[in-house]
Image 1 (cartoon, rainbow, N blue to C red):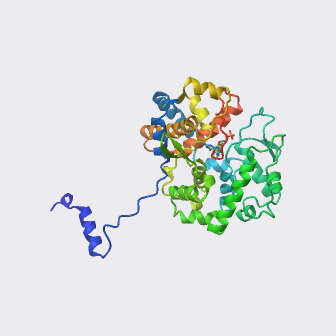
Image 2: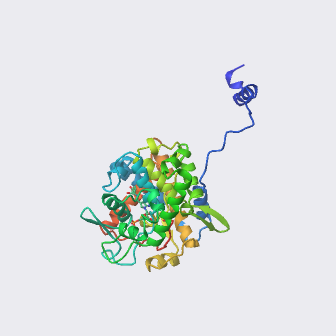
Image 3: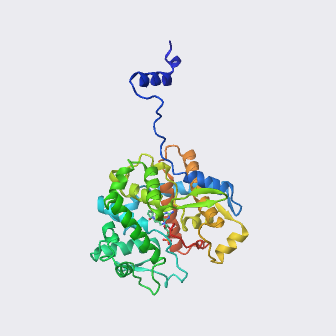
Length: 367
Ligand SMILES: Nc1nc2c(c(CN[C@H]3C=C[C@H](O)[C@@H]3O)cn2[C@@H]2O[C@H](COP(=O)(O)O)[C@@H](O)[C@H]2O)c(=O)[nH]1
């Protein structure tokens, strides 16, 4: 009997049965976040945002070339001046704290008057203001990355936290009250369920990125970035996903950053990446939505427009990833690296004053 006539599945089934195992006990299905399916559903049911296939294909080639030129990879993460360098549990705690609070930095005030943190002789704004505030607190001997500290309302008073995030301008940190609530909530949950160590939670995920994202969304209401869109529940999980991605990038896919399914993580639906995708014409807005954003009017969290924006960016980066893979099958580029590259490029374009549509204005703890 030729080998290709042998039914290998049947053989495996019989071996399992004869060995006393239960062949019908299928291996548990791998954990899935359903973020990509949610994004595709949103795009398929959007009427205010259009994805341009031609511009996405052109952008994919441009992005691939730019990432190659800058040798963009996991190692890029640690080259940022403020990111922690030690490859140990203290950096895991830093990353957890950072991504617990990694949301809503934009200000209504002009650049020079908006919230900023003074650290190492520089003024840091946006995402970097958060990282600078955490580094500054550690330098000042405040254990700001310790869940035990957050849970201790005597030691870690609201005044201490206000001082940790103090501004170099007259504007205090946006959503400071909500950030303090996130710290208290996370401190309690980590101490109750994981002996106060996020490293224990990483261990429970058994090196699955999706499992860790789902555990964060299950255990912490402040990571549960889920919404209702056109009669369906959609999962975005932006901060849970960027937390896993930051671990993976910081530890170079080793140690606390080892995830066998890391390529299942999507881009992170924030307010910065839509700006550059719009400038590349990959995503295009209805005249009403475009005018609303250009007039810097608020967009409610959980509204159709907001979810269309978030779903469109996730799905567009997925299309860019697939196009890069089609053009360069050998490439190891995933949605995380494309996302990091787009974010950093958007910040550079903002710094040099490239004229782009303003970011959309939605106040929320989700991004
Ligand atoms: N999609 C995506 N969103 C990101 C980041 C980062 C920073 N990641 C660092 C780590 C590796 C990368 O190389 C970056 O250096 C922050 N954000 C989000 O943007 C917003 C802040 O914007 P602005 O106020 O302008 O700084 C806010 O929602 C924040 O959560 C990213 O990478 N991707």
